[in-house]
Length: 229
Ligand SMILES: Nc1ncnc2c1ncn2[C@@H]1O[C@H](COP(=O)(O)OP(=O)(O)OP(=O)(O)O)[C@@H](O)[C@H]1O
Ligand SMILES: [Mg+2]
Image 1 (cartoon, rainbow, N blue to C red):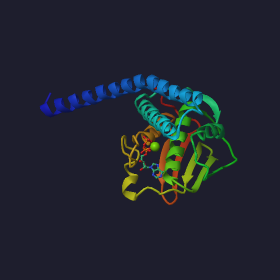
Image 2 (cartoon, helix red, strand yellow):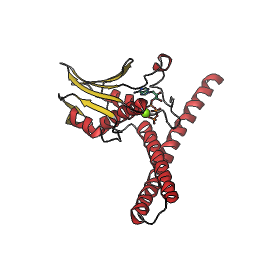
Image 3 (cartoon, rainbow, N blue to C red):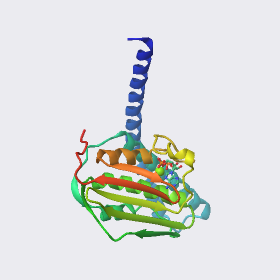
Image 4 (tube, rainbow, N blue to C red):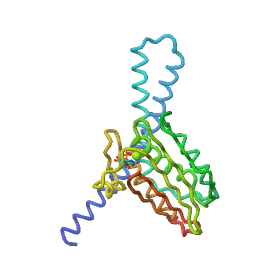
């Protein structure tokens, strides 16, 4: 083996080990983080009237910080673990409804098309996709704005569009947003969209984006030869 080839093999091996390590760390952190979150919520309930403003502020800080850590850990796990799909016949509209359970500020107006489509797919995984896209949209809107969710059915595929009236994506970033670890957010991990792409591609589909307004389009084939590695 030439020394250049050897170097690149070693690099791939190092990256593989790093991937496994981060998956393990993320996994092992999830339970203790859950314990912190539950414990602080119980403290809050138990001592509702006994705490002064300063103490309440500190509790909120711990809650927000643990929520953030749990989110990041879940992002890492969604990215590193490609799970085999659990396929069932599902209503896309229902999957979108479950995905809307992420926290959405009241000043964001949500419209969702009435039509539905049924598809053989993994509902839990597609929920991860749509929740990530909705979370990104909400973060891009910041204050007031609109979120439009559309479902369309063609002869061969189901198309879901998620449109937001937010800040938009600068043209120079468009080619980077699906890359792992690309983020423009101070506390972002940059794993949301790459996880979406992995899951959609596992379903044999595609995900794309267009600007003005920002629309993420997920196309899922009805009769795909689904990748089941
Ligand atoms: N709807 C959107 N409007 C504007 N920019 C977006 C939108 N969705 C994604 N982006 C851009 O793409 C980047 C990558 O998104 P991605 O979801 O992969 O990571 P993230 O949101 O930064 O972090 P996280 O890992 O928490 O999801 C974002 O940082 C943002 O710059
Ligand atoms: Mg994101």
